[in-house]
Image (cartoon, rainbow, N blue to C red; front, side, top):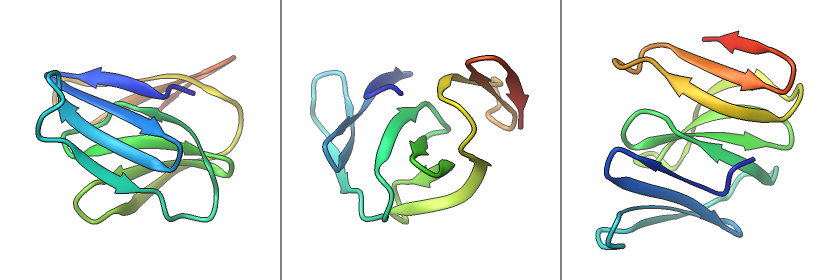
Length: 103
């Protein structure tokens, strides 16, 4: 999984059990401690204020405001290569090692 990515003018990342969101200069940083049971394997882009989180058990949509996974997307199948969103962020394609899933 990825440990960091850029989205529009924001950087998102994962350092140990801390997820962060900031602008390119590093200012306006929001940090959130990961308090769920399973470990984070990777993080991927999502709509503003959210990120797709890959854990040992599956995938979910994490909301920075509520500090929790608001939607479980998939059970764990295989490693995610990438998550691609439509321009309006109402549809996504999850690219797995050997398949593509539309949600």
